[in-house]
Length: 427
Image 1: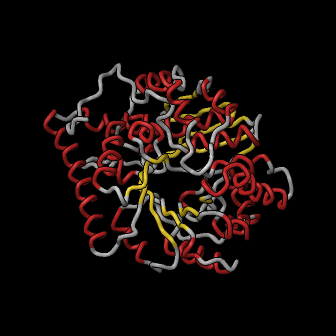
Image 2 (image 1 turned 45 degrees about the vertical axis):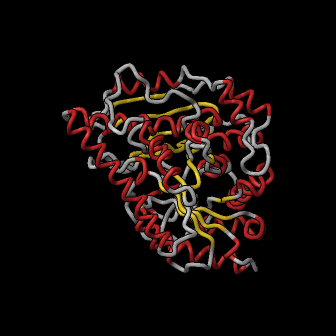
Image 3 (image 1 turned 45 degrees about the horizontal axis):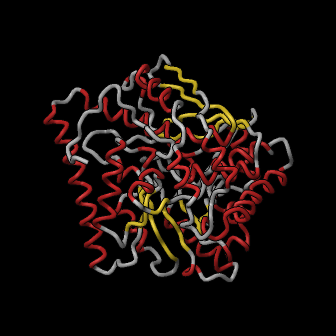
């Protein structure tokens, strides 16, 4: 691509492929279709930075892009790519799932512009279909917001913004090279920035640049389309929504019923994907209970865990102690840090208890939306309801809590949440 950004034509869609999503979209769809058919889910946009998006994004334009996505279908070449995905040690998607995916049309959306300048955007449908909107809806919203910030600029000013983004990317690459030369030779990372990228071509440029400049450190991208086009490893396993939805469906049961559902998510995931995709995300209702629900099998057999909220240092201590309590050497396990990182912070975390546990990192917004304009927002699309029952997320950072306060209070008790230090969401 050109290194100077060209304004997108009004008729040019932002998302042109249903593979332009995080890879865990497909693994979770396959999992849901195998174990949990028949669930209706509602997903909603949550704006944690409180910027009134309705004052920056034109309603008609947003609708045009959302409507266009509903006309898309997964193409034959894309189905062939997914059907042939063996990167994690076994064929990942069976013929039934591939056939279903080839017929997928994304469900309808509900968009309301509110009087206070905020927007309400929700997606409702069969769970496995509705979840596909997460990493399509978010980059559409983010790119329209970014473009609005540049709309009033001259061509020279816009070019200067993109040039500064390139300079910052170059600075990151050189920083990593210096760290590696200075002895940080085991430092590895992936790009997880689809959801909050400034614009589509920039993410492609970032992935292409990282692979060329840092072939030993850059592991791959969460963006499935880029992985296919560039021949990179598609990165990702699952998201918080699995436990959020399934626990919601068990909410009328006893406390033990709720905990059993949480445990079963890990057990069923292992049955379906085995070691290749065994990076657990245990912080949906607090990492303390998540690790308890993973249990001894999780400590011994799973590849590792992901840290996505709270203090990375505290989580490092927790994970090392958890492995040691089961007689497992943490040095043979992986801890993947993925919570709003930049590279200097990652190096600090890498130095903490260095050599005591395997480490890798995932960077999102800091790679795909680092420009000299305030375009990096903390936006998420999460499940709100499942078959009419409210969904809850607590996490290790109270600022990321989501759901009805009464349900949050119940699940804090059920999962014996330790609580954590509140840290406002940077991204």
